[in-house]
Image (tube, rainbow, N blue to C red; front, side, top):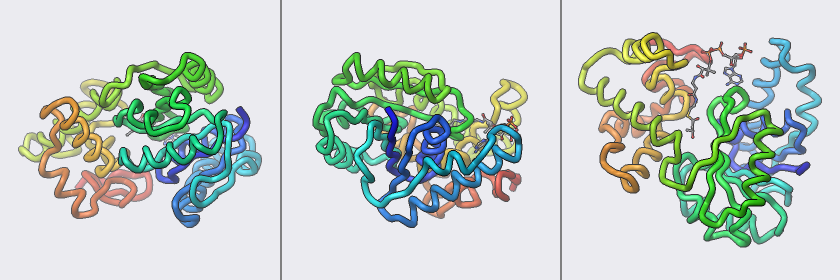
Amino acid sequence: MKTAVVLGAGTMGAGIAEVLARAGFETTLCDRELSLASRGLDRVKASLEKAVAKGKLASADEVLGRLSVAEGLGPVSDLFIEAVFEDIELKKRIFGEVSARSEETLLGSNTSSLSLTEIAAASQGPERVVGLHFFNPAPVMALLEVVRAEQTSPATLDRALELARRLGKTPVVVRDVAGFATSRLGIILGMEAIRMLEGGVASAGDIDRAMELGYRHPMGPLKLTDLVGLDVRLAIAEHLTREVGPQFSPPPLLRRMVRAGYLGKKSGRGFYRWDGDQALEE
Ligand code: 3HC
């Protein structure tokens, strides 16, 4: 595989495009409007410049030379990764359209919890569909959760595992059950931490410190929710509540914050106030 398209130029899409371009793919980052794709590219540029400054990357220009932006679905490519908002109908429509353009493209979705089987059923050549779940920040996190839809063929799974190795990620293969292996556990921790904050158990900073220092988590569950996006975590929690059970039901505080536009790091405010990469306790 030489060429890749990433659809959805938000935090995850931009991170995935960076990983692909750094691994040698000619990569097009796409969104419904060109300005959104360009904003994603700006994020990649900033990240590459940081990597160069730290001596982890020889040249940002070489990687940027493999990156372009486009509006809509972009060109036909060897690899397609969808990283749009968690909306099953939107994803089904996208896979229906992209799968009709070529029989060769490997069709991956970065969904955190939605059914790959349902997405594959909306695609032509559903055996080519596979979950490629990356983690934020994508250039740093070592895991690629590979999700096997009912229709995913052994050849597609092999291609996905080979891709993980090429990207320098360690794959785990998971059956297509709601929340897979990662979101199912991660969301429980995140929702419980928000309930604890709501119940006045401790401050956001202290709840996070407890898990960072007491359990050696690299980042506490509230700061992590800020990093991932409160809106993203709310959508996953609602889906898991419907599919698995009430243990995932999102606390009212999370809903209120999303309604207020406090979406975490990307909006400058969540459980912390954000000054660039710096989380400031309220
Ligand atoms: N892009 C690129 N590199 C980054 C980065 C970013 N956004 N953020 C941090 N880094 C790099 C730093 O440059 C640094 O590199 P170095 O060691 O070579 O100098 C390294 O990562 C460590 O960063 P810092 O020293 O600044 O800070 P930390 O040691 O606290 O690490 C962290 C930051 C990697 C984000 C760490 O706190 C962490 O692992 N947090 C948990 C992240 C996590 O759990 N992600 C999963 C979220 S769930 C998800 O994504 C699923 C989705 O479906 C919702």
